[in-house]
Length: 251
Length: 251
DNA sequence: ATGTCTTTGTGAACGCGTGCACAAAGATGG
DNA sequence: CCATCTTTGTGCACGCGTTCACAAAGACAT
Image (cartoon, rainbow over all chains, first blue to last red):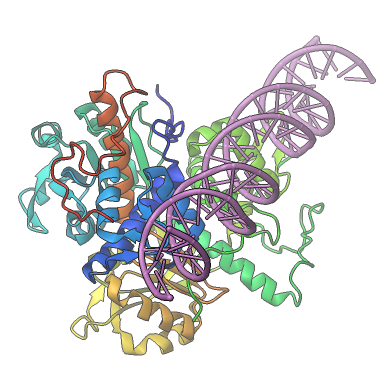
């Protein structure tokens, strides 16, 4: 069945912590900006500020890649850009397919951040026959029927799913069967994939919900004069002063 | 100046761990699906499978909210939906503004996942005068000049930034000054905000880069017969067998 | 060459998050 | 009313990630 193997058992293969990998793109962006301004070297303190992280964390992160800094001076910007790019695998070309060319899929196809980082949109795929042939971001949309051949012909190993939730798992299965081993999922669903396939999830509404939680906390703290008190919810009473409980009680 | 206070000093106010908060929307979605299928109760094991997490983790998460389960039976679906919604602050209405109505902004405006979770798109804002008045997702786009009054009139506390990177910080500053205290940032930049303002970041290209890293690792492991060996990169030689190093060496 | 000064690289401590494993709680049947 | 069975709630241990603090390394001036 291969049920929900979304989380990998850690990346302890060569020793770069997952948390560090997740920050490398951040450093890379900051470094690229410095590079464009022809800044030759940068200290961990400066770069950390630019990337929005702690400087000690940054140094430790870089230490996993090797000793690329010079004590008393800092890091060579160009050299570091290259090392991180190589570590992330961005020195090679990654053909990517985007499945589901709705509003979001079109936005992704037009997103400039991909091409500039070694990612090439090899194909746009949609299930709607009316979309077929219509160019989006200068690339003609192809029909889902050709998914397998498109993957094979372009040697695609990374797929982006921007379909409705209902179609996501099915598309995912076909992508995986066709040889895709990394998936970026924008559909609000939990995808089941076999071992060896990586899935990363981006969920817009989840992010907003997390913000709402913190926003509500702020409001509550504001209302209750001093924070840290009051918040004793009436846990016993099943029908407290909540007023309108639109749900059945258990038991 | 308020330099880079992106990370909050932990949410230890009422005791719900940040990691748990981030999973609550996941549970909520799974529960909502069960609710629509009129499933009355669900065990931690089943729900965990549906949400793609460990069942012990799920039980511990719920324990932070209180004891809402019944031993031997499981959790009451409707009741839990309500409790999580309330905890996340989704029982109230959250007016949201989206700034930057390009491809992505339009996709967000059309995204159905917002409205169904208590979020209401109060306004769409763009700096392009040509966009003003043009309806997107049934909502007329307004000009950036009116940003402050829009925020004030609608009581907006959550803002979404979907502008180009160059404009993001400026827009952010104006949002914060106008009273917004939670920001969802899609622009590839580190935003500086004063204390008390929450920022969550969604970066499309970063996710792809992380996938590329793992994809490359797979390829390397594949190439080297048995994984776990070989990977001794020539650390000494500045000019190893890399071939084309398009960067300056340090020192 | 030597001393000073800056900045890296990292050892060590700490805290958070995860998952195991089990006791307590309650449902259910006799 | 008692026994059994299911499932929750959680104590505990472990590992990862973060941060501090400092020694080692190198640049630079004299």
